[in-house]
Image 1 (cartoon, rainbow, N blue to C red):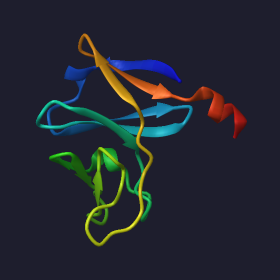
Image 2 (cartoon, rainbow, N blue to C red):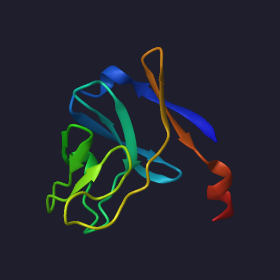
Image 3 (spheres, rainbow, N blue to C red):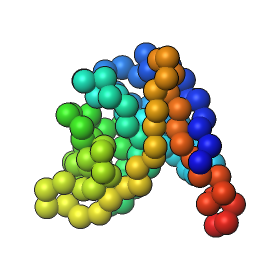
Amino acid sequence: MNWFDIGAIDDIPLRGARCVATPQGRIGVFRTAGDTIYAIEDHCPHRGGPLSEGIVHGASVTCPLHNWVFSLETGQAQGPDEGSVKTIPVKVVNGRISLGLDLAAMAAE
């Protein structure tokens, strides 16, 4: 796994998100009210909605298109909805956010 710096934690508002274009596709990077950072694929499996434009609440995000709710910790849909999105490893060091991307797996695809 390779770690890629994507910016400062302060670049993302509390209960907000940013979309980052990577070789693995678009990734939504989320900051909770408790200052925890999560990263997941930035598309809802239901209709492809941009999850980074959704509402962050607790450790979840609600899709802006049809209100599906996803756990930022596991990527699993919550409640009666079914499906999941891939979670991306994240680390924060000295106020900088890095994403863990598996470039070898991408090359094999």
